[in-house]
Image (cartoon, rainbow, N blue to C red; front, side, top):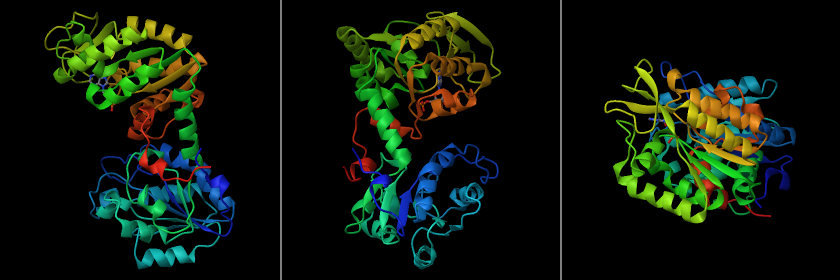
Length: 399
Ligand code: AMP
């Protein structure tokens, strides 16, 4: 078990916390946050720290500025939202994350004050896990907290190097990180059975490790979304112009053979909503497997598939879900994804939503509060479900 913020004395101390404020901004002005979930989810730990007599320095990345200052990726909009959420608290913003101005601002903090640093990735040293950069961050505070589960799969200065950068500085998990480790860990280590994993999304190539690893643990593995077509093709079905990865056909065959040998149920779509172009306004048909004509592509699962998925979900005691069942960003192909979100919410099973697009789908279908746990990390959640040790968690102290 990892030590958490509750295991160290923070009264009168300065705490530096890595959080995941990598929020989506609107494409036009780049200044409006379009989904505040990541900030909202960090509030418990932030409030815990400031109400326990510590001052708090927050650091995060936003987007991929590639080691250069780029106003497009400034955390200023996050600061504005945060200052509103913490009204009554002194919330400051530093125009950089290291340097004299930051040191001065950090020194000026009183118990209960909050300082948000500018985007860590304006410095290439962050992603290079540079020791001096990590030390400059560590020297701002007395205690290091990592609550950025979404960045824990990266060994960067703020997620890995910092934990060893200053002698005797405690390095512990925040409350959100603790929750992520507990729910994602328990779901796969001690699931109540039947244990069902639903893995969707675009590509087999990006999820093959998680498919292989979950297959060992689940009773039923449902492979849906764009990646299902590589499996269907491997079974000899005709998939038209659906998303398809030729180089993964053999892998798909191996996964299916392994599932059979292990006595696991591997579920694939039985019917499809197809379109004649990748567009919400395309011509649309619903058809069984094998009837996808050339020039048409599978964009969502059909009603027969949903009927069977409901049965699988209703019989489950634990469900892990990652990845949409169709191109849910387009309204005409969002039905499968939103229906499955509702089935999971209604099922009464322990439900763990493993990050990324499925989180957006759960939020959009209005069932978020019915899920047991919604992970804030996309890539990190996948790597955790694969059973990998994440660098940002490995460096935290154990108890
Ligand atoms: P991932 O990041 O791998 O979870 O993939 C998410 C993406 O998969 C979303 O943007 C979906 O639009 C896309 N997706 C889901 N189903 C399909 C499909 N049948 N064809 C093409 N893209 C899909």
